[in-house]
Image 1: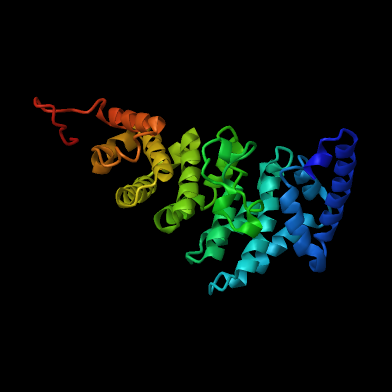
Image 2: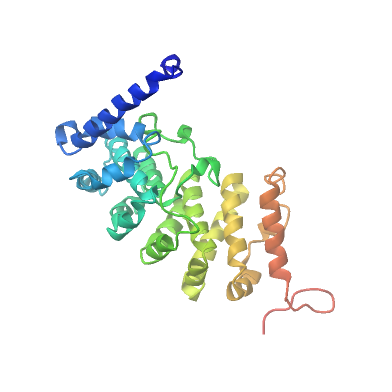
Length: 330
């Protein structure tokens, strides 16, 4: 196959054949009899067809078919009876929604239709079985990042090896919504329950899903509107701080450099808010102040720099006694 691709005239012919196949598979999504294979084939091709998202969005009945795939497995969520086959199939449908969510021509319409809300029931699940874990990861993937592969940016750990063989491309957490310069995305997420859902996963999910959920929280915090929202009330801030604190304690027992990196970045961003900074002086875990994570971070200069900046932020403006010991707030 690779040798054919090197000949000049052949790729055009192959591309034309592929494009005809793409149209055929999109048409086949409308029929329950042919949908499963079409989902699988299109999810494999989504990286190599730049305009697949508009094709999916504007073709008759396609988005309805993808939503039907999602709704069809709601009964398998509670009680939790989801099978590996069901999980892989719906992950292929979610992969195509990731494609639509990440494309600049379709993202706004995707949000306006509130399609991410169809995925929130999957994020509510707590079953530890592999089918459910892949379902949560793929659903988080629709919210994670857009444009470039996340693997080339902040989530370099999210590779196909983390995902089921039959859905390695379909659920490839390469991205979708969250993007720091997409204000409409942050505004949309803040009107939904994504923050408490992420906090729940951060507390009890697998290491990989915890990392993705923490990354989503981090992206929300990095936006000024998101930071202000979380720090607006004591209840919101304390919930976030409590979960981050539990994660630090757990990481001191079961270290994960990739998860720790995003936890530290969340703390650092929170310290940019004056009220949160004051509270963090009282509740920042001791493990982030001592040498607990020195070995884990020995080769991670970025996270070490963030951690040093966090400690510095909390020390600045703090009142001390003559011995340099911090005094409690008045």
